[in-house]
Image (cartoon, rainbow, N blue to C red; front, side, top):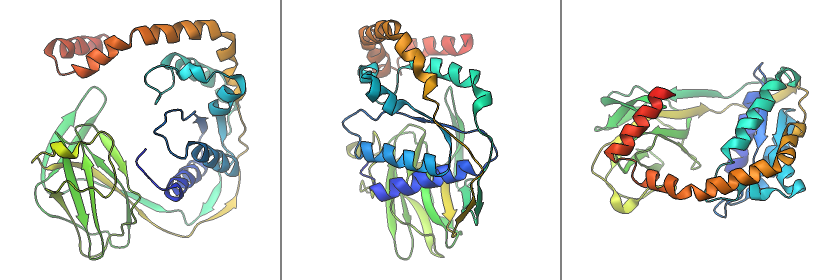
Length: 302
């Protein structure tokens, strides 16, 4: 959706499954359909997922191929195509728990793993920011911050602003700018940016962005300082897959309930469509004092 090149997407998917496969724990991947028109490379992306799921032998549920094979893509057929129906995913969660003993717990042996570091606690003004799900310590980038991890690559920015603001990271050879809105967001960085001895961070007053940001409006750029939670960086090492100790397999038998409950699901889809106006109204007026009060009651009850 953000014009990330397919090579970067593949590298990120590979790194994810490589890391997951080397941890001695059960892993099951849910391969979801990508149905919205704004998704680019959607067929290629899911094929890349399958490539590395099978290479590292992880357990998985291929919901994408199941929908296509059984002609039930319309199970996604309401306004918000970015997410599966909550009812279907709740039922799938129950099935995964019921069959938990079937999943593999082996771990692959990989040499010279990448070293990942989460940088936070920068030395500027700080504030705490929270909502019903998250509580973060935010650094307000009011001064120039220096980074000391020479030789590391920046691969992500975690931000949570009060309003639209832009961060600028610059080194002797590169400059990178990225926007953040008032959502708690992680920004994947595709631009190759290596930290050197002259790498600094500052809040930018220019609305230029090196890469796009979801729901960022450059025409409403504020004067507020960028709210930086953390930087995600990596020291690149050469790795080699020494031994595969996993025996993962496909678990599409867990999806049989969808066909058996087709009538119930179709009724649920109809209900979701008919109630979309209420959802949109609440989303549009989420700062209304009455709606905020109702959400507070909901949190107390749940």
